[in-house]
Image 1 (spheres, each protein chain N blue to C red):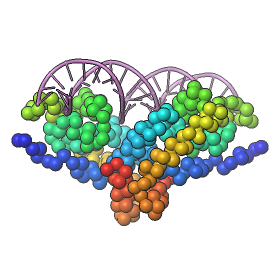
Image 2: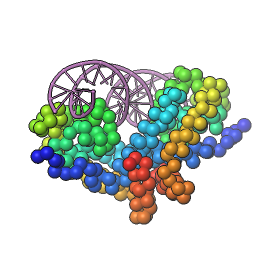
Image 3: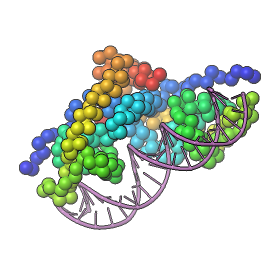
Amino acid sequence: MSTPEQPLGLGALEDIAGFNLRRAHGAVQRHFSAHCADLALTQKQISVLWLVGDHPEIAQTDLARLLDMDRATTMAIVHALEKRALLARTKRGRDARKVALALTEAGVTIFAQARVAIAEHEAWLTARFSPSELTALLELLRRIYC
Amino acid sequence: MSTPEQPLGLGALEDIAGFNLRRAHGAVQRHFSAHCADLALTQKQISVLWLVGDHPEIAQTDLARLLDMDRATTMAIVHALEKRALLARTKRGRDARKVALALTEAGVTIFAQARVAIAEHEAWLTARFSPSELTALLELLRRIYC
DNA sequence: TATTGTTATACTCTATAACTATA
DNA sequence: TATAGTTATAGAGTATAACAATA
């Protein structure tokens, strides 16, 4: 036979919510990586810089809770950012177990650049939706993880 | 001070579409892993079993195109499934470059179990939406990756 | 006892690069 | 030249387990 028996489509898989979510996430991640390659920062790393910038002296545990990460995962990301001197770690709180995270000057600088890149990336993503569609999408997505 | 300066929330990050997509994806992935731990299959692996079941003798390239994966990534997943004897690879097509994938008996059996687990997982995920909300969500997500 | 951080380890997904065989 | 598969390699994210220091 020179033609396949079936049209080679996704079939019933296309109706699985989890599948669609994973595909959408993958597409966005891919665009992000390509668009923000210059910064050499991942989405997750930028989320961490963002929150540390918003909350100076935040502890790793709080970061983990806000981003729903394991302590070890948080450690890995913080460590990578510290290695690049974008983040500094000190222990100056009342609770000697906790670490106080803060952006370095280089961290503030690169985050400012990241904000621009993210805005462009977001524009690419949200251009396909009307304002009300975007609001609806965000509300539905939040209902999954909140 | 005994209280933090800020309430330790996500702030403006919460309005980023990509962030919400990533968080929702992470939450779903986590539930999937916990719920389907017995099968020891990932979402991606099940997607591959699903498509190979639907399209006997599908080639790796076609699989890669349907799931938007790199050839090397596809190879890694197929190899892992072949190692567990859930998938078989032959070269019987007219095009000697292509491999023909097919489920083994064990693959058919475990996929049947996976379908049940996926149905339960999907029920957990979609229970938070009305039928029209779910339809809307899927339509919006497809617009991202299609 | 519980919490915080830390290290070691492992697995999945992803991608790039370079290679072979075939078209 | 282009396509299909293959291997080696690497990096990000995730998680578990075990441990030390502190509360």
